[in-house]
Length: 315
Image (cartoon, rainbow, N blue to C red; front, top):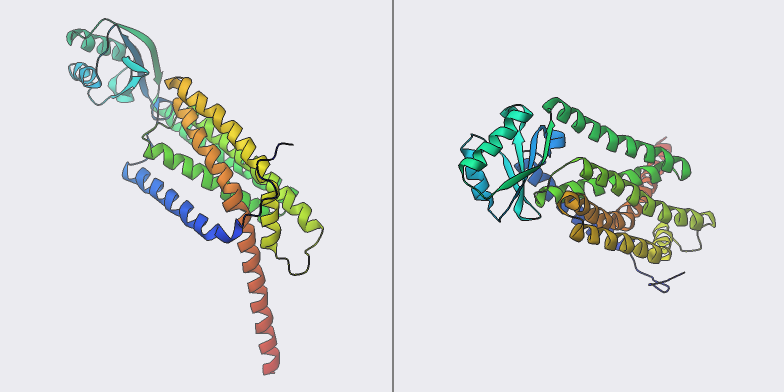
């Protein structure tokens, strides 16, 4: 087996508070940005409306296309360069009319503005009710996935392990959504697929670490050894496997991001963020939560015993 770390002895658990702080800052910054924008930037799949993909014979600009749409009162549309300066995606709110009517308005505005010859390559419509239903289904899909993972990890390991894994997954999803918002990218069905993929990838890494923790704890603690030592050892023993797996996936997704075209770019971007944060959370979020939970539980038990002893002495 290929090893890129030979007998690593990194103290990950001691750095957990720094990791918690970084995760908290990144997540809060992303959530604040989402709130400041009034929510995520939803694609046509979720918000409803008409999508028109137009290819011009010569390069033009977003401002020129915007001016053309202003002529037919479609100025509130979202216009995005699609691959190069000759092709554009035009997203038009659902309230702007029926599909055929909206398409005719777009063509009329482009002709009146005397832009270079053009071809309509794609025309799609999603009703606002369908968009709202898809938003709810997206939330249900992510929550259902997390609930299933919680049950699985709780049965395979213990309840604490299940909760720690879910908190790590929630961290990964929030960071991915924050990155989408900060990069001004759309939340669409492909991005939803990326989020579910992130959940699966992250829990795979976490389970590998948890399996090694269970094996080590099963042999019992050595004299002077703590739970933090056991978990540090488990993370270090699986570190080469974790990094190699994540690096392989990252390189493939990076190629997809660069060469996959605009249609897949948001999907690949979400996956790039997810691969990094999924690996990070397995090491710096899920495992350390078990340590802190165990420490809190032991401190609580000691406090309860002291209370009982004091009560007995008072009698």
